[in-house]
Image (tube, rainbow, N blue to C red; front, side, top):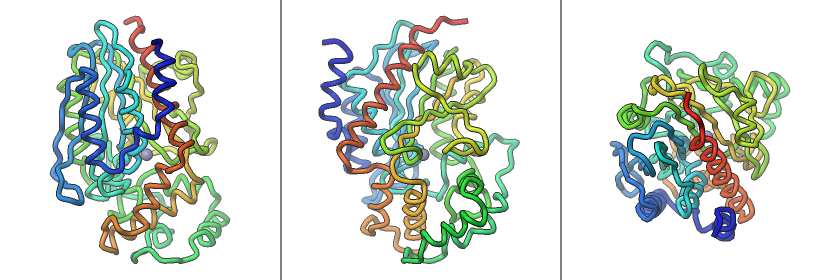
Length: 370
Ligand SMILES: [Zn+2]
């Protein structure tokens, strides 16, 4: 059976790869990785799930243990977004691209297991992990001025309640402009520990353990192509590919041609995306100084930015000012906002997810070394 025919068969049942909760997803990932012949690692975290269950970042490695060329695929940096990323990884493990000699495929399952288990985007300390990867010399303080001014609207200190959210949001957008508003809110802040998009006062345990693992296990790599799956930005069911500009990285036009896909350069003001501080993509070249690193963040679109933000805001209120338990509709609404139940959405994003990995594998495993 050729690769594409097998992939079509996988896609007929794409919705089956979606798990109802973190514990199920983790068990399925580990079983599928073992079946595929992968070597498994588990990085344990101190935080626990809602039933007291242990939380781990699970890593499956296929191919050469001392590979010089590595395709690194990560899911769930934003917790609840892992429902989609985990499904993509499970589908991929049905027939993963075979690493050539001297190559490896590494799948990292759920970088923020607390967030997946508790249906949160942030981690156990309310930290947005894709704003948390700052180097030692970078300051972890401050917030955009506009964020500070509208903190009470973004993060009301009360449990979720009807408060004319859309009217308030419209008013803020009229006053400040939609794009500046989005940029100020989402770029990351280090001043409001109970607020959304909080980047944290220290490098968090999960990211720290993950970076240590990379240093230890990828020290022989000379080229690393990192793909990081997210949801919630861009048109419904579509992918938006956001490369991280870095010195030494493959020029974006060249990478786009290799992948046969459009890559969007994020600069202030001209795209649906926004510039962030403390993203994971900027950190990888620093922990892998012996390697050239290309990093592409794959966003899979769900609902409108306002609908997604509203779900984030409500869940954040419930976490800080309610019981935080899974029973509240705000929890289920956040899951729906970042991993819609619609069959056609799920089928589409699994196709986009595994399609990108196969394209990246073709490029990475055939790449000539400098
Ligand atoms: Zn995300």
